[in-house]
Image 1: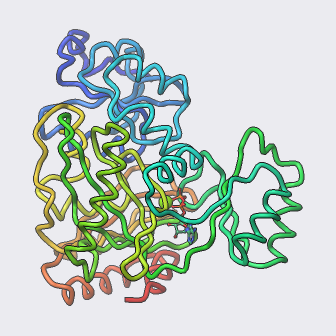
Image 2: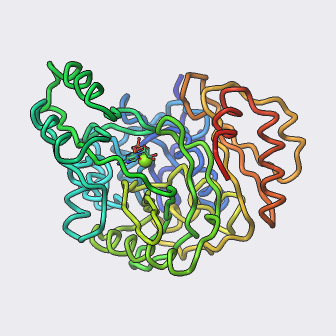
Length: 390
Ligand code: ADP
Ligand code: MG
Protein backbone atom coordinates (compact mmCIF):
# COMPACT_ATOMS: atom_id res chain seq x y z
CA UNK A 1 0.00 0.00 0.00
CA UNK A 2 1.35 3.43 -0.83
CA UNK A 3 0.42 6.65 0.82
CA UNK A 4 0.48 10.05 -0.84
CA UNK A 5 2.73 12.08 1.39
CA UNK A 6 0.47 13.87 3.91
CA UNK A 7 -2.16 13.63 1.15
CA UNK A 8 -0.89 16.76 -0.56
CA UNK A 9 1.57 16.85 -3.44
CA UNK A 10 2.34 20.54 -2.89
CA UNK A 11 3.69 19.55 0.50
CA UNK A 12 7.06 18.76 -1.04
CA UNK A 13 7.33 22.39 -2.14
CA UNK A 14 7.69 23.26 1.50
CA UNK A 15 11.01 21.42 1.57
CA UNK A 16 12.56 23.70 4.18
CA UNK A 17 10.51 21.77 6.71
CA UNK A 18 11.64 18.32 5.62
CA UNK A 19 14.57 16.24 6.86
CA UNK A 20 15.24 12.95 5.07
CA UNK A 21 16.56 10.11 7.23
CA UNK A 22 18.36 7.18 5.57
CA UNK A 23 16.96 4.18 7.41
CA UNK A 24 13.52 3.51 8.82
CA UNK A 25 13.96 1.79 12.18
CA UNK A 26 13.30 2.99 15.70
CA UNK A 27 15.99 5.68 15.54
CA UNK A 28 14.30 7.31 12.52
CA UNK A 29 11.00 6.99 14.33
CA UNK A 30 12.35 8.74 17.42
CA UNK A 31 13.98 11.41 15.23
CA UNK A 32 10.50 11.99 13.88
CA UNK A 33 9.29 12.52 17.44
CA UNK A 34 12.14 14.98 18.06
CA UNK A 35 11.46 16.82 14.80
CA UNK A 36 7.70 17.10 14.86
CA UNK A 37 7.62 19.19 18.01
CA UNK A 38 9.88 21.68 16.21
CA UNK A 39 7.45 21.84 13.30
CA UNK A 40 9.76 19.84 11.07
CA UNK A 41 8.84 16.72 9.13
CA UNK A 42 10.75 13.52 8.55
CA UNK A 43 10.78 11.35 5.45
CA UNK A 44 12.42 8.00 6.18
CA UNK A 45 14.12 5.91 3.50
CA UNK A 46 13.98 2.12 3.37
CA UNK A 47 17.56 1.67 2.18
CA UNK A 48 17.06 -1.92 0.96
CA UNK A 49 13.86 -1.39 -1.00
CA UNK A 50 14.91 2.14 -2.02
CA UNK A 51 11.58 3.73 -1.21
CA UNK A 52 10.48 6.63 0.97
CA UNK A 53 8.38 5.62 3.95
CA UNK A 54 6.50 7.19 6.82
CA UNK A 55 8.91 7.11 9.78
CA UNK A 56 6.22 6.00 12.24
CA UNK A 57 3.98 3.48 10.50
CA UNK A 58 6.41 2.64 7.63
CA UNK A 59 3.80 3.00 4.87
CA UNK A 60 5.42 3.60 1.50
CA UNK A 61 5.14 7.20 0.33
CA UNK A 62 4.22 8.20 -3.19
CA UNK A 63 7.48 10.08 -3.84
CA UNK A 64 10.87 8.98 -5.09
CA UNK A 65 14.13 9.26 -3.15
CA UNK A 66 15.33 11.76 -5.79
CA UNK A 67 12.24 13.95 -5.20
CA UNK A 68 12.72 13.78 -1.45
CA UNK A 69 16.46 14.61 -1.71
CA UNK A 70 15.80 17.55 -3.97
CA UNK A 71 12.92 18.98 -1.89
CA UNK A 72 14.34 18.57 1.63
CA UNK A 73 16.35 20.89 3.84
CA UNK A 74 18.83 18.22 4.96
CA UNK A 75 19.57 14.51 4.69
CA UNK A 76 20.84 12.48 7.63
CA UNK A 77 20.97 8.82 8.62
CA UNK A 78 20.02 6.54 11.48
CA UNK A 79 22.48 3.80 10.59
CA UNK A 80 26.01 3.62 9.20
CA UNK A 81 25.65 0.29 7.42
CA UNK A 82 24.13 1.77 4.28
CA UNK A 83 24.63 0.94 0.59
CA UNK A 84 27.60 2.98 -0.65
CA UNK A 85 25.78 4.31 -3.70
CA UNK A 86 22.95 5.67 -1.53
CA UNK A 87 25.48 7.43 0.71
CA UNK A 88 27.14 8.86 -2.41
CA UNK A 89 23.81 10.06 -3.76
CA UNK A 90 23.13 11.78 -0.42
CA UNK A 91 26.62 13.29 -0.32
CA UNK A 92 26.38 14.52 -3.92
CA UNK A 93 23.20 16.43 -3.04
CA UNK A 94 25.32 18.72 -0.80
CA UNK A 95 22.74 18.28 2.00
CA UNK A 96 24.07 15.19 3.79
CA UNK A 97 24.84 15.62 7.49
CA UNK A 98 27.13 14.51 8.98
CA UNK A 99 28.83 13.42 5.70
CA UNK A 100 30.02 10.36 3.77
CA UNK A 101 33.44 10.31 5.49
CA UNK A 102 31.84 10.15 8.95
CA UNK A 103 29.52 7.35 7.83
CA UNK A 104 32.51 5.43 6.43
CA UNK A 105 34.39 5.77 9.73
CA UNK A 106 31.40 4.35 11.61
CA UNK A 107 30.70 1.64 9.05
CA UNK A 108 34.17 0.16 8.64
CA UNK A 109 36.29 -0.72 11.68
CA UNK A 110 39.47 -0.49 9.60
CA UNK A 111 38.69 3.10 8.56
CA UNK A 112 37.68 3.84 12.17
CA UNK A 113 40.93 2.48 13.62
CA UNK A 114 42.96 4.45 11.06
CA UNK A 115 41.13 7.62 12.09
CA UNK A 116 41.83 6.98 15.79
CA UNK A 117 45.49 6.21 15.09
CA UNK A 118 45.85 9.34 12.97
CA UNK A 119 44.51 11.44 15.88
CA UNK A 120 46.64 9.49 18.42
CA UNK A 121 43.51 8.55 20.34
CA UNK A 122 44.01 5.46 22.53
CA UNK A 123 42.01 2.46 21.31
CA UNK A 124 42.14 -1.33 21.73
CA UNK A 125 45.39 -2.89 20.55
CA UNK A 126 44.45 -4.63 17.33
CA UNK A 127 45.55 -6.26 14.07
CA UNK A 128 43.84 -6.39 10.69
CA UNK A 129 43.13 -10.00 9.72
CA UNK A 130 43.28 -10.99 6.04
CA UNK A 131 43.83 -14.73 6.47
CA UNK A 132 43.67 -17.57 8.97
CA UNK A 133 47.45 -17.22 9.34
CA UNK A 134 47.03 -13.55 10.27
CA UNK A 135 44.63 -14.68 12.99
CA UNK A 136 47.09 -17.20 14.40
CA UNK A 137 49.75 -14.51 14.36
CA UNK A 138 47.42 -12.05 16.13
CA UNK A 139 46.68 -14.65 18.80
CA UNK A 140 50.42 -14.99 19.46
CA UNK A 141 50.86 -11.22 19.61
CA UNK A 142 47.67 -10.09 21.36
CA UNK A 143 46.36 -13.25 23.09
CA UNK A 144 45.42 -15.15 25.11
CA UNK A 145 42.08 -13.34 24.86
CA UNK A 146 40.93 -11.81 21.59
CA UNK A 147 37.72 -10.38 20.23
CA UNK A 148 37.53 -10.92 16.49
CA UNK A 149 35.17 -8.60 14.62
CA UNK A 150 33.99 -8.23 11.04
CA UNK A 151 35.23 -4.94 9.64
CA UNK A 152 31.74 -4.03 8.41
CA UNK A 153 28.08 -4.71 9.21
CA UNK A 154 28.57 -5.50 12.92
CA UNK A 155 26.14 -4.17 15.52
CA UNK A 156 24.64 -5.33 18.82
CA UNK A 157 27.47 -7.86 19.13
CA UNK A 158 26.70 -9.51 15.76
CA UNK A 159 29.73 -10.34 13.62
CA UNK A 160 32.04 -11.14 16.54
CA UNK A 161 33.92 -14.17 17.79
CA UNK A 162 35.33 -14.43 21.29
CA UNK A 163 38.63 -16.30 21.25
CA UNK A 164 39.60 -16.90 24.85
CA UNK A 165 41.76 -20.03 24.56
CA UNK A 166 43.92 -22.01 22.15
CA UNK A 167 40.92 -24.34 21.74
CA UNK A 168 38.71 -21.38 20.71
CA UNK A 169 41.39 -20.35 18.23
CA UNK A 170 41.37 -23.79 16.59
CA UNK A 171 37.58 -23.78 16.36
CA UNK A 172 37.42 -20.29 14.84
CA UNK A 173 40.27 -21.04 12.40
CA UNK A 174 38.33 -24.10 11.23
CA UNK A 175 35.14 -22.06 10.90
CA UNK A 176 37.02 -19.50 8.81
CA UNK A 177 38.69 -22.02 6.49
CA UNK A 178 36.54 -20.90 3.51
CA UNK A 179 35.95 -17.34 4.66
CA UNK A 180 36.23 -14.61 2.01
CA UNK A 181 38.74 -12.30 3.73
CA UNK A 182 39.10 -10.23 0.58
CA UNK A 183 35.41 -9.35 0.68
CA UNK A 184 35.32 -8.94 4.47
CA UNK A 185 38.60 -8.33 6.29
CA UNK A 186 38.41 -8.89 10.04
CA UNK A 187 39.86 -7.01 12.99
CA UNK A 188 41.31 -8.84 16.00
CA UNK A 189 41.32 -6.79 19.20
CA UNK A 190 42.94 -7.57 22.48
CA UNK A 191 40.19 -8.32 24.99
CA UNK A 192 40.29 -5.43 27.43
CA UNK A 193 39.67 -5.98 31.14
CA UNK A 194 38.08 -2.57 31.62
CA UNK A 195 36.40 -1.38 34.82
CA UNK A 196 33.36 -0.12 33.01
CA UNK A 197 31.91 0.90 29.67
CA UNK A 198 30.84 4.49 29.19
CA UNK A 199 29.74 6.53 26.21
CA UNK A 200 29.85 10.18 25.33
CA UNK A 201 27.17 11.73 23.18
CA UNK A 202 28.02 15.09 21.73
CA UNK A 203 26.26 17.21 19.18
CA UNK A 204 27.86 19.64 16.75
CA UNK A 205 25.84 22.42 15.17
CA UNK A 206 26.12 23.72 11.62
CA UNK A 207 28.80 26.22 12.74
CA UNK A 208 30.99 23.53 14.31
CA UNK A 209 30.04 24.38 17.92
CA UNK A 210 29.84 21.36 20.25
CA UNK A 211 27.59 20.50 23.17
CA UNK A 212 27.94 17.35 25.27
CA UNK A 213 25.61 15.24 27.32
CA UNK A 214 27.05 13.89 30.57
CA UNK A 215 28.84 10.54 30.23
CA UNK A 216 26.62 7.45 30.43
CA UNK A 217 27.54 4.13 32.05
CA UNK A 218 26.58 1.14 29.91
CA UNK A 219 26.06 -2.54 30.75
CA UNK A 220 25.95 -5.21 28.04
CA UNK A 221 25.03 -8.87 27.78
CA UNK A 222 26.15 -10.86 24.72
CA UNK A 223 27.46 -7.67 23.14
CA UNK A 224 24.07 -5.95 23.38
CA UNK A 225 23.14 -3.01 25.60
CA UNK A 226 21.00 -3.96 28.61
CA UNK A 227 21.12 -0.91 30.87
CA UNK A 228 22.41 2.66 30.73
CA UNK A 229 22.83 4.83 33.82
CA UNK A 230 23.07 8.57 33.36
CA UNK A 231 24.86 10.64 34.38
CA UNK A 232 27.43 7.86 34.88
CA UNK A 233 27.84 7.12 38.61
CA UNK A 234 30.96 8.72 40.14
CA UNK A 235 31.37 11.00 37.15
CA UNK A 236 34.08 13.57 37.75
CA UNK A 237 34.53 16.81 35.79
CA UNK A 238 38.02 15.57 34.79
CA UNK A 239 36.67 12.35 33.24
CA UNK A 240 33.94 14.25 31.41
CA UNK A 241 36.47 16.75 30.16
CA UNK A 242 38.85 14.06 28.89
CA UNK A 243 36.06 12.30 27.04
CA UNK A 244 34.96 15.61 25.53
CA UNK A 245 38.50 16.29 24.28
CA UNK A 246 38.48 12.91 22.46
CA UNK A 247 35.05 13.64 21.05
CA UNK A 248 36.03 17.08 19.85
CA UNK A 249 39.16 15.80 18.09
CA UNK A 250 37.09 13.22 16.19
CA UNK A 251 34.19 15.56 15.39
CA UNK A 252 36.53 18.30 14.16
CA UNK A 253 38.56 15.89 12.04
CA UNK A 254 35.36 14.61 10.42
CA UNK A 255 33.96 18.13 9.92
CA UNK A 256 30.97 16.79 11.77
CA UNK A 257 27.42 18.10 12.05
CA UNK A 258 24.84 16.32 14.20
CA UNK A 259 25.04 13.81 17.01
CA UNK A 260 28.14 11.64 17.34
CA UNK A 261 28.34 8.84 19.91
CA UNK A 262 31.64 7.48 21.21
CA UNK A 263 31.83 4.19 23.11
CA UNK A 264 34.67 4.06 25.63
CA UNK A 265 36.29 1.55 27.96
CA UNK A 266 37.35 3.08 31.28
CA UNK A 267 40.06 1.70 33.54
CA UNK A 268 40.98 4.08 36.33
CA UNK A 269 41.85 7.32 34.61
CA UNK A 270 42.46 5.64 31.26
CA UNK A 271 39.96 5.91 28.42
CA UNK A 272 40.12 3.69 25.33
CA UNK A 273 37.81 4.30 22.40
CA UNK A 274 35.93 1.11 21.51
CA UNK A 275 34.00 2.47 18.55
CA UNK A 276 32.23 5.52 17.21
CA UNK A 277 28.68 5.80 15.89
CA UNK A 278 27.94 8.70 13.52
CA UNK A 279 24.31 8.95 14.61
CA UNK A 280 21.95 8.94 17.55
CA UNK A 281 22.71 6.01 19.83
CA UNK A 282 20.96 3.52 22.10
CA UNK A 283 23.00 4.73 25.09
CA UNK A 284 21.48 8.20 24.58
CA UNK A 285 17.83 7.18 24.85
CA UNK A 286 17.83 8.36 28.49
CA UNK A 287 18.02 11.96 27.22
CA UNK A 288 14.34 11.72 26.21
CA UNK A 289 13.43 12.06 29.89
CA UNK A 290 16.70 13.32 31.35
CA UNK A 291 17.35 16.52 29.39
CA UNK A 292 15.57 19.58 28.05
CA UNK A 293 16.53 18.53 24.51
CA UNK A 294 16.86 14.80 23.74
CA UNK A 295 19.60 13.43 21.48
CA UNK A 296 16.95 13.07 18.76
CA UNK A 297 15.79 16.66 18.99
CA UNK A 298 19.35 17.98 19.12
CA UNK A 299 20.46 15.90 16.15
CA UNK A 300 17.57 17.30 14.13
CA UNK A 301 18.29 20.83 15.33
CA UNK A 302 21.92 20.45 14.25
CA UNK A 303 21.25 19.10 10.77
CA UNK A 304 18.45 21.65 10.24
CA UNK A 305 20.83 24.50 11.09
CA UNK A 306 18.93 25.45 14.26
CA UNK A 307 20.38 26.44 17.66
CA UNK A 308 21.13 23.45 19.90
CA UNK A 309 19.07 22.73 23.02
CA UNK A 310 20.36 22.27 26.55
CA UNK A 311 22.25 19.00 27.11
CA UNK A 312 22.62 19.07 30.88
CA UNK A 313 20.98 16.30 32.92
CA UNK A 314 17.90 17.40 34.80
CA UNK A 315 17.39 14.02 36.48
CA UNK A 316 19.08 10.68 37.05
CA UNK A 317 17.86 8.22 34.45
CA UNK A 318 18.19 4.46 33.99
CA UNK A 319 17.41 3.18 30.50
CA UNK A 320 16.42 -0.48 30.30
CA UNK A 321 16.39 -2.06 26.83
CA UNK A 322 13.40 -4.24 26.03
CA UNK A 323 14.76 -6.98 23.79
CA UNK A 324 13.15 -9.95 22.02
CA UNK A 325 9.92 -9.99 24.03
CA UNK A 326 6.36 -8.81 23.31
CA UNK A 327 4.93 -5.64 24.83
CA UNK A 328 5.06 -5.70 28.63
CA UNK A 329 2.01 -5.80 30.82
CA UNK A 330 0.48 -2.43 31.61
CA UNK A 331 1.69 -2.88 35.22
CA UNK A 332 4.96 -1.25 34.20
CA UNK A 333 3.02 1.80 33.05
CA UNK A 334 1.45 2.13 36.49
CA UNK A 335 4.85 2.85 38.06
CA UNK A 336 5.38 6.58 38.49
CA UNK A 337 8.47 8.04 36.78
CA UNK A 338 8.62 5.11 34.39
CA UNK A 339 8.40 5.86 30.67
CA UNK A 340 7.82 3.10 28.16
CA UNK A 341 8.95 3.72 24.58
CA UNK A 342 7.66 1.03 22.23
CA UNK A 343 8.88 0.74 18.62
CA UNK A 344 5.98 -1.31 17.28
CA UNK A 345 8.07 -3.97 15.55
CA UNK A 346 7.36 -7.67 15.20
CA UNK A 347 9.06 -9.76 17.88
CA UNK A 348 12.28 -11.60 17.11
CA UNK A 349 14.96 -12.96 19.44
CA UNK A 350 17.60 -10.31 20.29
CA UNK A 351 15.58 -7.63 18.48
CA UNK A 352 15.28 -4.27 20.23
CA UNK A 353 11.54 -3.86 20.76
CA UNK A 354 11.50 -0.79 22.98
CA UNK A 355 13.06 0.73 26.06
CA UNK A 356 12.01 2.01 29.44
CA UNK A 357 13.37 5.22 30.93
CA UNK A 358 13.26 5.33 34.73
CA UNK A 359 13.60 8.77 36.24
CA UNK A 360 14.66 9.73 39.78
CA UNK A 361 16.32 12.53 41.64
CA UNK A 362 18.65 10.46 43.79
CA UNK A 363 20.41 7.13 43.41
CA UNK A 364 18.45 5.38 46.13
CA UNK A 365 15.16 6.20 44.42
CA UNK A 366 16.61 5.13 41.07
CA UNK A 367 17.80 1.76 42.41
CA UNK A 368 14.39 1.18 43.98
CA UNK A 369 12.70 1.89 40.65
CA UNK A 370 15.10 -0.44 38.80
CA UNK A 371 14.18 -3.15 41.31
CA UNK A 372 10.45 -2.56 40.78
CA UNK A 373 10.80 -2.68 37.00
CA UNK A 374 13.02 -5.76 37.26
CA UNK A 375 10.22 -7.61 39.07
CA UNK A 376 7.81 -6.89 36.20
CA UNK A 377 10.13 -7.89 33.35
CA UNK A 378 9.96 -11.20 31.47
CA UNK A 379 12.51 -13.68 32.79
CA UNK A 380 15.05 -13.28 29.95
CA UNK A 381 15.30 -9.54 30.56
CA UNK A 382 15.10 -9.72 34.36
CA UNK A 383 18.01 -12.16 34.34
CA UNK A 384 20.28 -9.79 32.39
CA UNK A 385 19.38 -6.89 34.67
CA UNK A 386 19.95 -8.92 37.84
CA UNK A 387 23.43 -9.93 36.65
CA UNK A 388 24.55 -6.31 36.58
CA UNK A 389 26.47 -5.56 39.72
CA UNK A 390 25.98 -2.14 41.24
P1 ADP B 1 28.91 -3.46 18.20
O1 ADP B 1 29.15 -2.73 16.93
O2 ADP B 1 28.21 -4.75 18.03
O3 ADP B 1 28.33 -2.58 19.28
P2 ADP B 1 31.32 -3.43 19.83
O4 ADP B 1 32.70 -3.38 19.27
O5 ADP B 1 30.84 -2.22 20.53
O6 ADP B 1 30.37 -3.89 18.65
O7 ADP B 1 31.24 -4.68 20.80
C1 ADP B 1 30.07 -4.96 21.56
C2 ADP B 1 30.45 -5.17 23.02
O8 ADP B 1 31.41 -6.23 23.13
C3 ADP B 1 31.12 -3.96 23.66
O9 ADP B 1 30.18 -3.01 24.11
C4 ADP B 1 31.88 -4.64 24.80
O10 ADP B 1 31.00 -4.98 25.85
C5 ADP B 1 32.36 -5.93 24.15
N1 ADP B 1 33.70 -5.71 23.55
C6 ADP B 1 33.94 -5.31 22.29
N2 ADP B 1 35.26 -5.19 22.06
C7 ADP B 1 35.89 -5.54 23.19
C8 ADP B 1 37.26 -5.63 23.59
N3 ADP B 1 38.27 -5.36 22.77
N4 ADP B 1 37.52 -6.02 24.87
C9 ADP B 1 36.52 -6.33 25.72
N5 ADP B 1 35.20 -6.27 25.40
C10 ADP B 1 34.88 -5.88 24.16
MG1 MG C 1 29.22 -0.99 20.29
